[in-house]
Length: 311
Image (cartoon, rainbow, N blue to C red; front, top):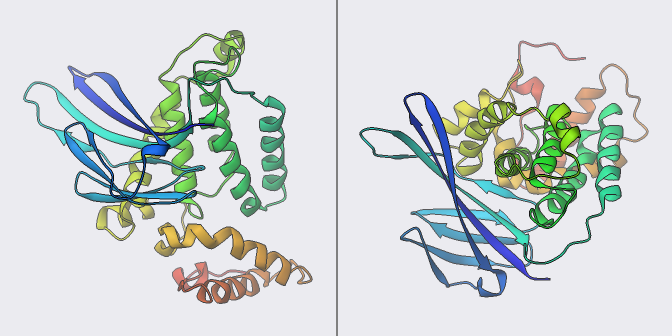
């Protein structure tokens, strides 16, 4: 099955208080993506630096980006477009998908089963178990051709995504790139109002204004993913919500690549520990040690919030 690298340029203009969005979509065949290859995208060179079956690193507009080929939907921060009469902003979205000209066998039952598992993990307080589920779910969502299915059209997929975001099936401060990918994919699909067999359902259940909330997340998360150590990224990190400070090391790609493996290890290591008062300190100590073995220095909530009592 042919894979494509998608590059979407989105421009937003505000003229007399009225907002307009336009997209320009470029697709490159994966077979043409080799290290050293250069492509002209909007008059700027996009250079492939490294690529394997899981990830691609590339340079564009003077910056270096890395995108996971299976699940990540990478959106850049906004950049200004000078215009005396109209306020304009633009940005780019990058992701891999299967060829949209192919027919796909959409497994709605499988997608529903993944969501059911996510909900069970949420109810049990085991959000870390949702990390691979959400990654697989995103892969399913972005690899189904948006124009081929009479049932699962882009608007319906946006509705699916909004439910995962609204119900907090993943922790944005544990996996910011995963949460960011959901937001970006939602925003891509919500602008494609194709008809489907679910029109009555969507008219009743689809929140057409939810994009405003998602846009707020996108603005913050795009800066965090772009450069976690920059001042604007740190300010955005602190503004993600919640009263407690969280170590910004959790915003780094190194953290996100190992956190599921660490949580699996801790689940086995602490399986016989009572989950009563004081357990959080045992858990944080073990987590800090597991991360240190992987070269990551992490400060626990108690270290980040010394005046707060934890039991």
